[in-house]
Image (cartoon, rainbow, N blue to C red; front, side, top):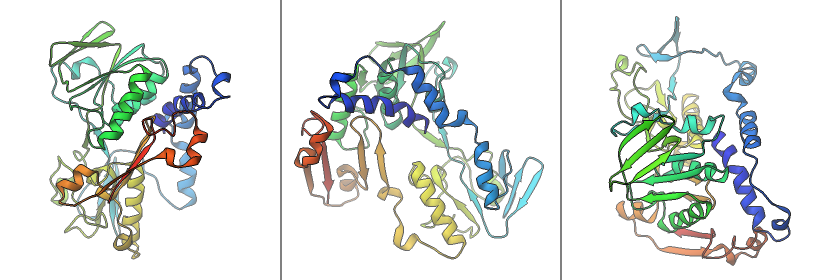
Length: 354
């Protein structure tokens, strides 16, 4: 919610500026303060108390605190010991990964949490990582007037998606003013007062007021009490097609914690898989869509939407594919979205691998 609230105003403004008639009516930059206020409204200032009545109406008891397993079908939350009749579902999620870069941890870096909830915009932002989070937040901050330097260790942004999509996103971010440095890795980080300095492998530096680390996620399996039921902590927890832990007919793990598909919508889908199986209404046999089959969207401009394999992962899996490119200019309706929106060279082609 917070990242999309930051992205939407810039996306909408860019779209309007592509439409003759609307272009002439629009001048000036986004009102960054108004964008941040709207973001806070949408996320209710990170206060989830408004959701409690929804739970109570459905007979769901809420215990606030750090929960951990304490043996089979037992969960401890503070001084409360909860015993399940049927099952326990873990949905612990993941935490941002901080790579072992000299001086990084001591430089007070931002993670996605700080970047999406910041109360003020820095004049300069350095972003480590050109994946989904790094690319989306580089666009959000760039559209709001922050000078952004985006650093990616691979040779291109969005390395897990098709290369043609990466090229279009790179062109869009560059036009926005983002300084993109690919095939570069940070070797050290240090703070000089209110300034953070990142030294790269080629000896160059990237200087900003804040540093966002967007280099991946790690499962939060520690302190969950997994050892009390014979499961080692430290990695993703393996589950079957119903999100149940093999050998534990009462334990289910959904969302990022099982590593199958790290998306919010997939966590909700897996919740349906788990609850259906617990209640004797399994749906996995006909509706299994997570893992490599998961649909996904990257909310850059242009957006990158995909489902299933890329050509690279299909080839690695031994699947023979045929690639079909279809520019959206082939659809007359695309022209209503403005100049360039339906041109093959712009943010506008779709590709299917069969």
